[in-house]
Amino acid sequence: MFGLGMPELIVIFLIVLVVFGAGKLPQIGEGLGKGIKNFKKSIKEEEAADKPEDRGELEDRKSSD
Image (cartoon, rainbow, N blue to C red):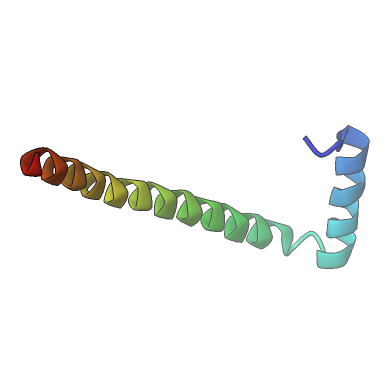
């Protein structure tokens, strides 16, 4: 992916642990998880909203022919 192996990820985790402390990590993880969940939800809603419009445009084109 980005050339990150296990040793690099461990170093990043240790730096985050030192900067934020062990007490904040669960809150950071929860916030990150909620953010990813909301992002996926908005993408799905956007795709669902686009589909009926595309179908409506196709039906309009067929009826005008």
